[in-house]
Image 1 (cartoon, each protein chain N blue to C red):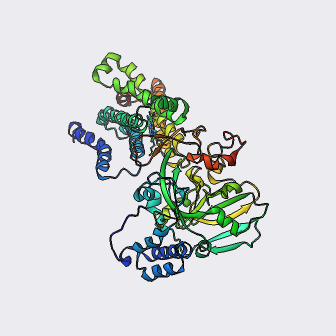
Image 2 (image 1 turned 90 degrees about the vertical axis):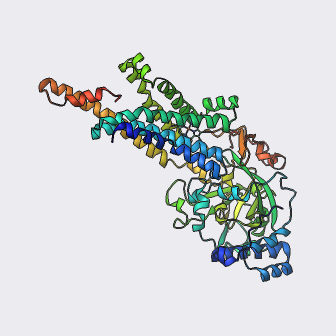
Length: 218
Length: 319
Ligand code: HEM
């Protein structure tokens, strides 16, 4: 199936978590503490979309399915979409614009500091996600800027690890997945430079792979 | 008093044997004490299901110590709470707590006391006590709160019965440990069994109660049936649930959350808006069921009654 055909479906699927929240809202399924529930669900999906977006490049390399790359931007933007919902829930529903308390939280609660860092880092990425911005910045600079997603994802995991009271199992699972995703990038980097070095001695036929990699952020 | 009427369904259709027995226990305890033998006999005579479990409770003594704030709904109180023995999600207790058997139930009483250590059957434990309604604010360390119409009796009355010696400086409580029925205990999220403790003068304070019911009904398992502590001026986790042991001890015990994270949870854990949890602010709270946050009050609004317990203590250090 062509990418063009699948894309709308993936897009719709990415809206399912929001749809479920709205559904629960109408059917009284948001628990006794709806604001907390919404905060948790939108936070979960922010982190999940960050990880899914980060999984694209390793998957592409693993499967050789180059078309996967064209989903990356959408998935990253969905991570941003959910963090905007997450942050808005916090500002509007939880604290109802009590900016003194919010500021206090951002400065003094380390888990909020971490989450806020992740959120702020994602803003320039969302703003520069258009074709025009890619052209304006130039591929190399754009790619360097978009490596911020690594830091944002780490901040997100740290945020989660710091906010749980005692049960760190889930945050650690997310941390492990993130470590694998970032680890493959390092691994590819080493593999690539090793390849380059060996090519000086004996040129191989792997240049096609290298070209495919060059088009995307590692 | 607000009592939700359940539709008229025969007990056999909705109540399993265990619940049925638990309710009978409750009726006996309540009737034996508050209502008197005659009324109790009548109630027992009529008893044919969950509905009537409410009857003796309408005669519950009201207490001047109750707040006049509106209690949260039965549904909210019983579907949203922490009881890590059943999982760390606040829906887990309601989901899984009925896997716990609470009959038969006995409480081990031991330690520095004049009466001999004993395993006391729950019925015998409750029989001498007069149940009353205590409508209390409950403030969770996670910055949410509720108002709960407990049914219970002063912890101090029970303590006096067992005559602690002058060496008994603290009262230590332990929750049931039964991983095969309490799935949360199968992972070491906290150190099991859960333990909590109060200083003797805190335990003797009239606000501290042992609860057996809520909204005129026996406690549901997720609320810590059949017997739990309620200490309304402290964060919720001090109010230990499903108690199987009460000990009088000389040295200050360490409570489970303090063992888990000593710099975050102290022994006292008094509600205090000025001492923040290192990870979140304690200045405000969300009352379940209302939208706007409210300011948290010192000692959860019970300062007039309990502040003197802590005269001269640095509450910043003894958090
Ligand atoms: C990259 C950015 C972020 C990610 C990945 C993220 C992720 C998460 C996750 C996974 C949770 C836990 C959900 C659960 O327990 O099921 C959470 C909770 C939460 N997040 Fe975020 N978050 C981010 C940014 C923020 C920001 C900017 C704020 C507010 C300034 C914030 C405030 C909160 C709050 C208040 C909670 C609930 C804490 C609690 O229940 O104690 N987060 N977030």
